[in-house]
Length: 346
Image 1: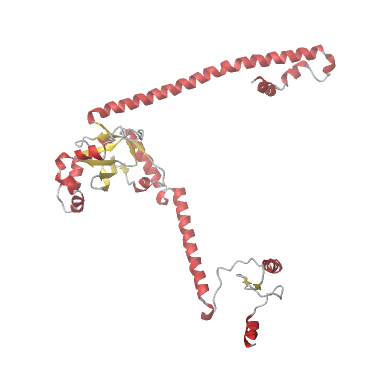
Image 2: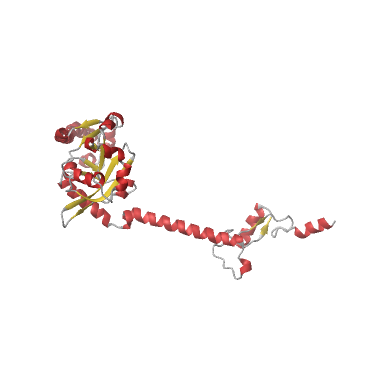
């Protein structure tokens, strides 16, 4: 009997129907209800939203429960998420790093590269290669400063270098960074020990971009030339990437690639220019042919339209009952449903 009395005391009655035991508590006003119908009636009667207030002040330490502390933590987390989202949206709208100056540098670099005969392509801002690019053109010194990637495929490593002058000779650059013993390149030399032992046999290549995926090719580069001279006439995505390879790698790792020798590079570029010129002339001829054929196709339709108008005018003039004093044959001819006739003739 005592247990039944305790249960009765613990039992909380619904504050809406005042009959059933309460099962729910409103997050906003903490009113107790027993069913969905009572919840709806409560919201309708009190205009309660049912949403817990995000900024309730605790006047004493007793009010600061674990639930309220967790609510504050979630609120701060949500605020941090929204700030991060807003920053990313701003960067996408205004360009990477939130500065429109990067776009100006890209345009200047592309224009100067075009003058040098380098086909520099800019990738979308979401690409990692675009974000990593630090190349620029110094307008005062009239010098390219490239970001250059050197890939050692057999060792499974690649190195990125910023502010590499376009007037640097490729062989001197590689020797300075990798094959001449200095304190700065000790880590690089350790990681490419395979290449260091056979440095006399090394060759440098560059992938040919804009080719078919099933027919990959590599440029064999002349390392005695400057970087700008090497890039002349080639397609570059954001910044150049050079592949240092051993003779054995050509038979294993790059056996699917066909090699374009330095002597044949100029011929290859001329072939590409001839193909582009041929496509351009062909497009011009197609446009001219379309302009010539269009009037020839329209002329018979125009003649049929005129004949049809004349027949209708003659038919109306033969039957005076169809005409009225305010309607003349010329006005009828000028207001014929030509569009409907065109559709029927077509």
